[in-house]
Length: 420
Image (cartoon, rainbow, N blue to C red; front, side):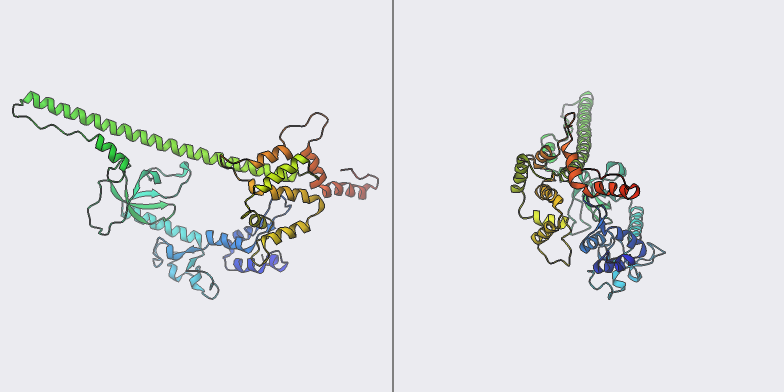
C-alpha cells in the first residue's frame, strides 16, 4: 500500500482512509480500491468516496447504536469495555476528527459482543419470542424463530404493568436483521381478533360455540345429549381453526418459495442482460448500418435525461471527489481521448447503458432490440463470418493481432504480418 501511494497508484485520499485502519482491515479495504470492468485489462482505481462508503458500511460501527452496554467488560474479556478500547474513533479524536460519533473499528469484536449479549438475553428471559426482521435464505433460518409475516408488531405500552391487549402478546427479541438485540411487544397469533381485522370479521360471523342453557324439564339423558352436541360443535370448530391455520402456513410457505424463485429468476435475468450489453458493446462494428443507427437513436431518445450523464460519468471514472468537472465535461473528455476504433463502441455504450436494467411490463425492451441488430444469437450461414466475431477482430483486438506476428518476425525474420 505504501508503494502504491509512492508510485501514485492510489491518491492521498485513499491513503488517508487506509492509514486509519488496522493491518487486517487495511488488506481487506485495499482490495476495495480497485475494480475491473469489461473494457479493462487491469483493475482501475475507484474514487476515494467509494472506499469511504465501503468502510462506513463494513468497518465503522456506531457505538451509540450498539445493542450492548459499551461499559461492560465481560462481553469480551480479552478486549474489555468499549469505553476504554483504543480501536474506536473516540480514543483518538485528533486523528478521527471528521468521523461523526464514536465508531468501533473492530467488527469481529463488535459482533462477538452482540452474540454474547443475545445469549445472555435468551438465557435470562426464556419467555422472549425470538424474531428476525430481515429476509435471508430459508436454509439459513433457524427453527422456532419467527419471520416478519408470523407476528404483529405492537406499540410499546405507556404503563408496563398494564394488562396485555390479547392472550398472545409477548416480548420479542430481535436475533437477526435490523435492530438486532432490541426488544418490543408483538402478538404471535396471526388470527388474533384484536390485531387482525380480517380474522376479527371472520370470527364475528363464525363465533366460537357455546353450550345451550338447560331447560326446566330437562332430564339426565337430554342433558347428556346437549353436552355431547356442544362438545361435537367445539371439536368441529377447533378442527376448522386448525384447518385454517395449516392453510395459512401452507400459503405462507408457498409465498416464500415463490418470492425466492422470483428473486433467483430476476438475478439470473440481470446477469443475462449484463452479458448481452457487454457482448453488444464488445462487438460494436466499425460503422453502423441504417438499421443499427435507428436502434441507437431510439434508445438515445428514450434515455432518462436526468440521470444518464451522471451514471455514465461515474462509470467512466469521472466521479473523483477532487474532480470539479461536470458529468458532461467528463464524457466529452472521454470522447476526446478515445482511439478512432473505440468510438462506435462508446456510442453503443452511451445509447444502451440506461437500458441494461429490466424493463417494466409496459415498457419496450431496447436492449433486446439492440441484441437483434448488433449481436444476434443465430449462427451465420455456412461460409460466412459471424458479424460479432468480425467486429471483435477488426475493432477490439487490433494490437493483439499485430503484436503476435511482430514477435514472430523478430525471432525468425521471415514470417509476414497477418492480415486483420
